[in-house]
Amino acid sequence: MKNTTPKQVVIRVCNDPTCAKKGPESIMRKIKQAFGLENTQKNADYDLEYCGCLGNCDFGPNLSVNDNIIQRANPDTIIGEIAKAAEAIPPTPKEKMANLDKVLDDLI
Image 1 (cartoon, rainbow, N blue to C red):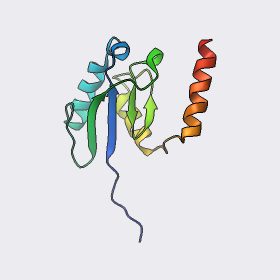
Image 2 (cartoon, helix red, strand yellow):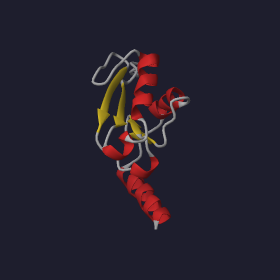
Image 3 (cartoon, rainbow, N blue to C red):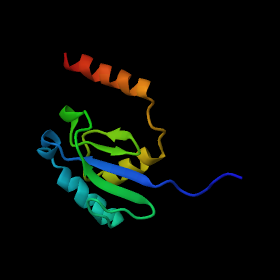
C-alpha cells in the first residue's frame, strides 16, 4: 500500500550577511501571509526558519525548499516557486557539485 501522507515542506531562508542585504525579510513576510508561519515555526505542512549561507551569495536572496535551492527569490512569485520546488526531486550530491562548478566557471 502506497503512503499518501504529504511530506512536510522544509523551507530555509538565507539570512547570512550577503543575502541579508538583498531582502530576505520580504520573502519571509510573503511566506507568513501565505502559510501563517514566522521564523522557527512549523505546522503539519511547513517548517520555516532562517538559515546561514546556502552557497549562492551572488544570486540572493536564496532559500532552500526540501533541499532545492531557489535563487534570486522574488516576493511576488515566491509562493509559486516554493510549491514547484516542494514537488521537485532534490539534486544528488554529484548534481550539486556540477551546478557549483558551472557557477564558478561563469564567474571566472
